Every structure is written in structure tokens, then in C-alpha cells.
Amino acid sequence: MLLQLKSIDYTPPNFTRPLLTDISFSLAAGECITLTGITGAGKSTLLRLLNRLSEPTSGQIVLNGADYRSIAPVALRQQVMLVSQQPQLLGMSVREALAYPLQLQSLGVAEIKQRILTVTEQFEIPTDWFDRNQSQLSVGQNQIVSIARGIITQPQVLLLDEPIASLDSTTAERILTTINTIGRSQQIGIIVINHQLELAAQFSDRLLYLHDGKLLIDKLIGSVDWQNLQQQIRESEDRLTSEWD
Image 1 (cartoon, rainbow, N blue to C red):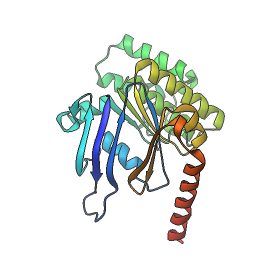
Image 2: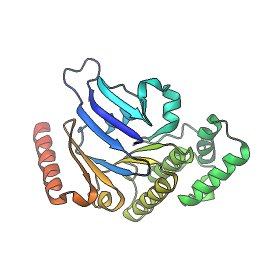
Image 3: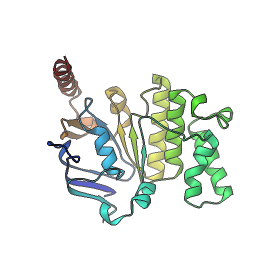
Image 4: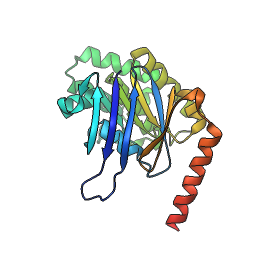
């Protein structure tokens, strides 16, 4: 198994209650998992643990049979790539942003050029974006570039935090199709935070549903009771809204 989480709990420093409790699941190479749940359920927190931006309070995370704690954070993040909800190109042009992680891997100029050519064709990134920086792209365009930058390094695991939130439905489906195709061909395990259940049903192998830091559903897409899940989400959102009021 590519990635395994075993009874993960996470309580941040100075917190009196856990944000995640007893989280256990696995991810296979080439598998795509949708992670869903209402705001505050713990989805982004879980991705941060998987990218080792935070450390579990208890439990174990295993990558290819090796305990996470035995892998240096920099080396781990080259194998487990996180594309955040608010992508940043760090003042670089699109071309520079795509090349930079490959330069960190000490790849040659020819290999870098070939990978940029391949990934920009896969994601239909036009050449007139190449010299633009983040402020010259829309939020959706920045998301597409950030996803391409994550995949270009050929990680073992790709973590995507709401990657299609700012895309129209047609573009979202195209991007998800591309991600799935690359994931299967390169045997990349993918975890996608996504609230659009109709797209989850179409583009995922499994669905994980988090509620209040607990994993309530872990099922193959074909066995998910979508009507019941939607009802659970609506009720949770209603309770959250009433608490805010």
C-alpha cells in the first residue's frame, strides 16, 4: 500500500479538543480519493499532516512501508506534494514557477524543458501565460498552473485542496479528467478535497467523509448512498449556521 494512516489524532498546541480523532485509511498507487465534509470538518488539517506541515499527536503515517518520522521533511514533500487552496507563484512567472521545483531536483535543462512542454500540453496552458505572474492571471488560472506545478515533479502522492473551486464546470471536468489520466498512468495516489459531489462521483475511486474531525464514511464510489450523504451534509451545515447565528 502506498500510504497508510493508522489511528491518527491531532490536537494543536494550546487546544483543549482534537481537530482529528482516530483517522485510519489507506491510499493505493494510482487511486483517486475525494475528501469531503463541511467547513471546519478537518479536511485541510488532514492534508497538512500528510504533507508534514503539522505532526500527529498520536498514531502513525506510513509511506511505502516507511514511518513518516523516518523521512526528512524536505524529502517527504518531494514525494507527497500539496497544492493549497490559495495557490502562490511566489513572484515568479508561470515558466519560472513550473521550472523551479525541477531545478530543486537538480534535473538538467533538457529534461526541465521537456516536462514543461508535456505538462502545459496536458493542462492546455497557453504559451501566452508563460511570462505572466500571479497578479496577471485569474484565480482559476493560478489554480491550473499550481496543479500542473504539483504534477510536474512526478510525486508519489498528490494532495489537492479544493483545486477546482474557482473553475467553471466545463474547465473543472477537463482538469479533473487530466489529473485522473496522469494519476493512473504514472501511478500517483491522489487525495482531492472537493465539495461538488457530482464530480466526486464521476472522477474518484473512493470517498471519505469527515465530520467534526472524525471519519464517518470510507467507501468505494459505487457503494456511496449519495442521498443520505447529502442529507448529512445539509443537516451539519444547518447546525453550523445556527451556531454562528
